[in-house]
Image (tube, rainbow, N blue to C red; front, side, top):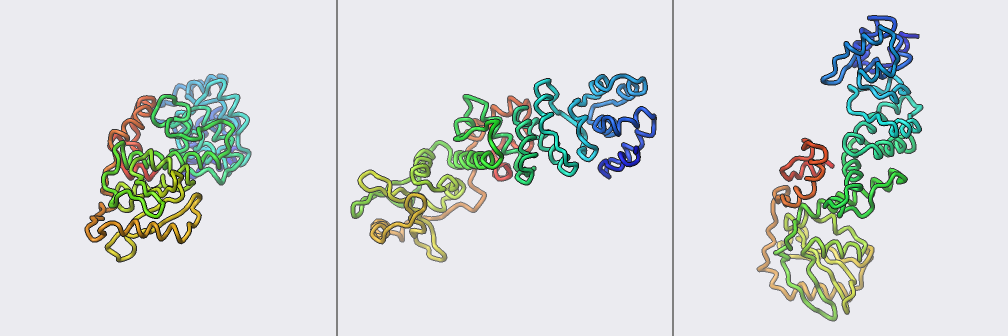
Length: 359
């Protein structure tokens, strides 16, 4: 029985767990009664001296006293040996959390390590309520839980309950405990797009739109040269303009709103087409990205050719060289850094395109 239990630990740690279990029969009993505690003492986290807890085990003290001495939450007792693939650190253990998490312990040994990693990461990066939520969603839709997405989900859920922060202002659909993982991922992705737009463009209007506003055949051509105007157009026209922050920051394709009698009828994008060195209309779409009439295309072409295209400087920045707006970056993340009392390596003080893309 003991041998079978010991073989269930991760191969990387099985030797250490086995060596500890062989030191005393009462320590070995933990393999069946409290696998997490045996693991925590065999693979101690940084700063933990297991000697005190081991002495209590040999003296026959209650498991709750031993777990407290080792800093191991009692709710981990229900998890199988397969769950533990790294030292146990920083897990919540309040009374309310213990009651809630008990409802979402995985039955599958295969799911257990992914489940525990997700709970630990979200508890560390967000808050206890979000950790209980991700525990439930790991059971309900395990295939939707990707470790690489947990940082964004955690940031979004943290800012969702952080009023009076810039990050919260940018959240259109906040995290709630009754959400399912699919809608939550979509809402977090939408939030990230808004963040990208803001840190790419900053608070100042885009100064170089290549072309000038105009009126042709009853149509008005308005520049979308600010975050507010782009966001308004994206909502009104049900399109993906908020994804163009990086593109606009590198001066690659200005965006325009086409209106008739004050009503938005299309969104227009100007850029280089293939090897053509002159500006072209590369996209002209109605609401919901619907096609527009030949009449509107003709008006747009006529508006384009009211400009001396040969004199328009379309030189864009090399990709990746446009700086992100530092003030926006600091304003966005400062409340999180202060609340966590640290600045994570993956969310640095200096604005970083790599960090933004990695979310």
